[in-house]
Length: 354
Image (cartoon, rainbow, N blue to C red; front, side, top):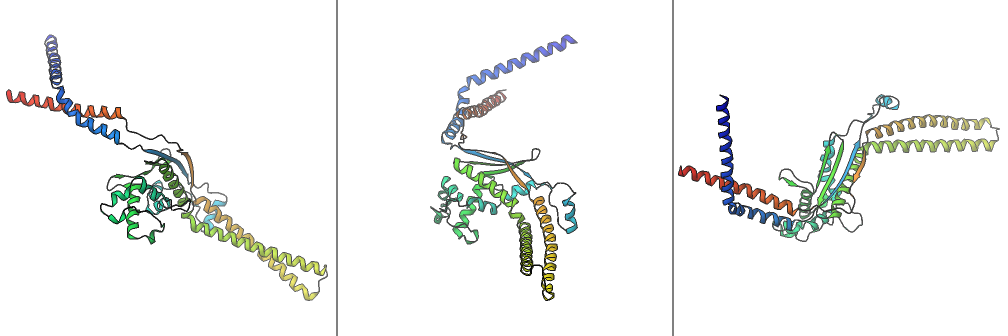
């Protein structure tokens, strides 16, 4: 029985070797057909390598600290005054959505540093020649450049151009268009990344830097404007009370100096009034300072802290297409399709002749 099994295995192995040899010879005789299949792929990938525009990648990596600490001490007093301690982790999805919003894009695209309308929006239009693409459907847009920065004052032409630049900047998930900038979050590391890839080194660095600055400003300042105003008002009130205390104290001191310790009964009322006012203002000042400290603590606990941990600096090495890699890709694809064609044709011929 073992001899029979070994004999069958030898026959099967022999058949396999003969089949491999048969198809190898078949492919060798028809290698020119496989070569023909490779030609269009070679032409395409070589053309792609030659015409490829170098891309400059810039990246900023940062973390966001937003945890409130402890429940004792001053933090424990906040609940008694109806003030939330804030804290809690900042929502990563919220940060990413804000980074992709039109409101933030407006701040990134129209930040004017030198007063000469050198907006990033115009830089993107010029680098990618967007008006040349837009004018096919909107002839009036040719040679367009932004001059205004307030969206509410935009004309129809300016709104059209803004929407086009915005789509170019962040892309479109619906149209599956990749944008110039991508914001991502690595949950297990707690690290955010702003990555830009453009055809201009300066543009890549500027977009990444301005987007980080605007996201940071939005969450550290703009979202807490009401709390900041309340804290500042309490500070102003405390300073005002302190000024009045000093003023009353000075008047009392002048009064005593003028009378040299000899105070007539008719003037005792004025001295007592000043002393009572100073005492009341001192009590009010103490309460005002306490409210200010609580408000300031609440603000600090609510405020996320953005910490930049890495940043791409100039010069940037451009990303290019590899000619060797593209040629290999063309040979693999062309060879695969050519092999399927040759073997398939042979099997069909055998079936018809058999």
